[in-house]
Image (cartoon, rainbow, N blue to C red; front, side, top):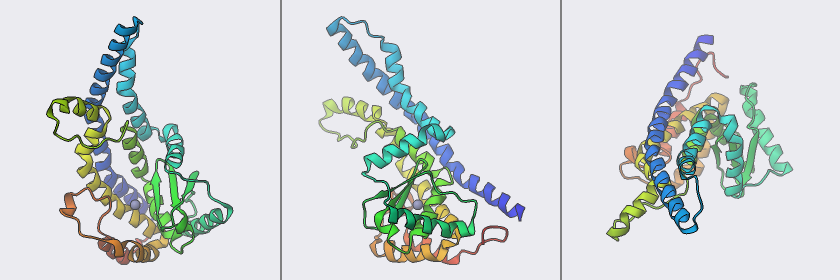
Length: 290
Ligand SMILES: [Zn+2]
């Protein structure tokens, strides 16, 4: 029994290692963004110094602007408790989330107790909030969980929350937060024309952190699609294979459309049908939950 648990943990870590490697590559790439930020900051402060006659400590300020986002992002991966609670609250505020009302709290607790019947060691996230959406969805980010109002009114709450717990109990939600912290400001990919302003717009794109995230986006989405299957498996091990398959059949499948070059695309989720098939074929290995 113990062996089965160990092998599951090892398998879990192995399946997340591409994410850690990809994060390291992305972080290294963002050194270009740091260089761009240092250059822009130094030039701006130099001009301000010349115009005002102030003596500005340009180098330390430029270095802080250049590397602070990378340091905070790295901290979100290696020591999540220092960053995740703040980033999660910011997520709630910036997306218009709200604290749950009493009936929603009870619905959440009821759904969670269904998961705890299978795994009594499972603890709910310290921070969860409600998104004012009628759909049956949820999301995990940093160490926080966002649950749509509609999900708490549905019969799929335990299944979908079980899936999101898969993202929260692995490195997925923390890496998502760390990547987001590398982005100073979302920017559209610069148009080629007018050509003479392209170097400046390109430099800003690089400095914003968006350029490197754009370059790595396809690889990241390939990884995230594999993590959807892992989170599904986690929910299945919590006894939610059937309910999650039902939820996907009724909520996602009707909206499914073909995606060009799916395997290498920027689709955030895999096709729904293979997810349903895997959930339907799920058998809990001996020694695990159930
Ligand atoms: Zn997911």
